[in-house]
Structures are given as structure tokens and as C-alpha cells.
Length: 319
Image (tube, rainbow, N blue to C red; front, side, top):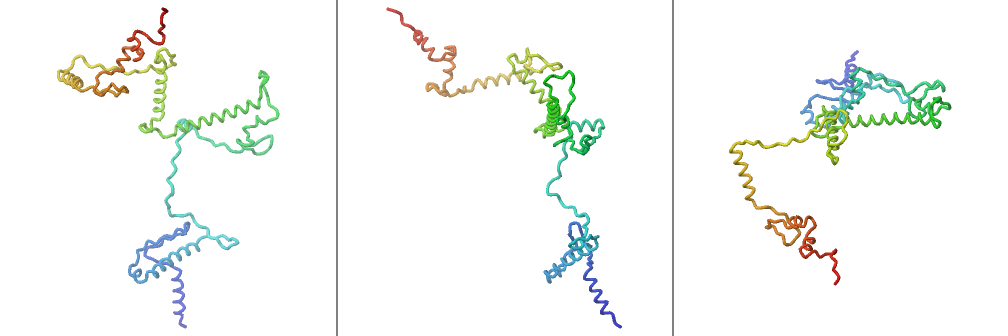
């Protein structure tokens, strides 16, 4: 009995479901992708491009289906479902990685002292209600003193003492304190201005505070001379005056004198005045001269004085 035809048909059927290439295909069942790194056969591509591309796509699809049928399956109303493994292909992120948040002041202190943070549970057991309640928020355990029907009051408490209001004010004070610390942490984590070092943020902030304090101290009428000083406050350092040396070389003295003479040779620059009599070629500032001669009263007062003192306050005598 000749079974060669049956074996050849079976071998052709097995060949149709197996994919063998020089470089094995990279199959990522998690993403349902197949990567073929084999070079393109130029002769087959030029001979029949569509047939060549269809064969490449068929090999990739057959390899992916074979990998899917080898995965564990679970039954469902729609039929068996394959459990996909985790993806192995590293895909690039659409956005950059988030920057780590800068540590808060308490986190820095805890790290220096070796203190480990213990996270509290959101639910606590209420013995009175015999149930789990929220630690904070709506009907939280932190408001038990505000809603209890009886409250213990000290014997020396004021007559108008309200324990519910006192508990509420204490809770709101804690909330305000936490919010203030949160804002301080945000301000501490803000980027520094241009020109300041990132490592010396506290030092830069201290310098800015000292500069502001110095400005406020010198903003009084006495320039801070008679102001009350704080305990431990340092004395302000003023600007030291720099004087030229009494004995200089002949070359330096000559250059200094020549500079003065060159300034004297230049024509004086005058400002344009509103008066039509003044011009750019005038050396004398007429307005300034009138103000100096009239002692700040102006040209009208100077004209009245020159005319004999007659003005609004001049009274004629009786004949």
C-alpha cells in the first residue's frame, strides 16, 4: 500500500501552520504584535510585490495565532478566552517622568533623626456605636467632642464657656496650622530666582530677609538711629567712603588734571526752557537765577519789589 501521497499531504498541512525563518520572529503576546527582523528578499519583492507582502503578513499572523493557542484559557459565555501575559516590549512614554516632590521640613527632620512614618488607618472603631467610622471628614471621629450630648467642664471655667465651640475652634486651629505648614512647604519647594544657587535656598532666603529688615530700619526719619533694636540684632554695615591718596605719582596727577581741563573746554549743555527768551546758546539759567534772587517767590514777586512794593496788600493813604 502506497501512503506517500497521504504523508506528503500531512507534511504540507503541518508546513502551513509552522513558520521557520533564518531570524526567529519576536512575538509579544501581551501587545499582540509580531516583529520580523529578516531582510527583504529583493528578487521575490521585485517579481510580485503583493504576493511577497501577503506571505510576510501570513507568516506573522500564523506565528501570533500559534502563540495565542498555546496560552492558558478560561471559559466564558462567549467561548474560551486566552489569558495574555504581561507585555515585553518597552514602549516610549507620551509624557516625561514626573519629577519627585521635594521633601518637606518634617520629612527632612525625620530622615535626619531616623524616624519612620507610620500611616494611620482611615477607619477607627467606635466603642459607643460599635462600628467602624471615618477618622476624619464627614461624621469623623475627630468631631466626637462636638456632637456628644454631654461634656465635662472644669470647675473654674467661665460662665459663658461653650465646650462645643471650644472643640470646634481647636479643630479649626489645627486645620489652619496644617494649611500654613503646607503653604510654607510649597513656598520652600518653589524654583529659586535666576542667579541664586539651588543648594543654598535657606541662606538666600535669610539674606533676603536681612536685606528687607535693613531697608525698613533706615526708612524712619532718624535713619534708624533712635529705633529700638532687637535682641541679638547686628549693627548695620554702612558704605565706606573711599578717599584718594594724598601722595600720587606725577603721571597720575597729570592725567587727572588733563581730564579736568578737557571737561572745561567743552561747551556747556543747557536744558530747553519754556521761556521764549532762553535759547540753546545761553550759558545762564534764567529761571534758576530768578528763583535764587527772589528767594523762591518767583518773577512776579521780584517785579513787585522792583516796582516799589505795590501789590495786592498795598493800601493807599488818605489825602
